[in-house]
Length: 101
Image (tube, rainbow, N blue to C red):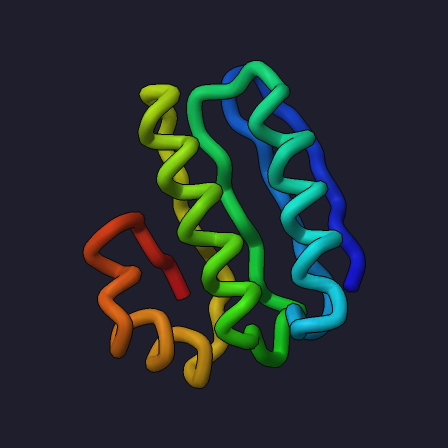
């Protein structure tokens, strides 16, 4: 899994490349901690290159979302494939943050 971050003013764009599985969920947690230390108003995740996410990875996204909202920031997801979109909708993540395909 690769994690690329680009900041443009108050928006931070995060591209994740590769599967988010149990083996790299801890890496994701560390990356999210570093993101939360940055100064931004919105985090936009590009999941175009993520074929699947395990429950551990989804848990890390939920923790990041919770911390983002607590800091009065926003989060959104774009570039999500049909399988991930179906998963995110089935667990109602689309009701927490914006998801664009």
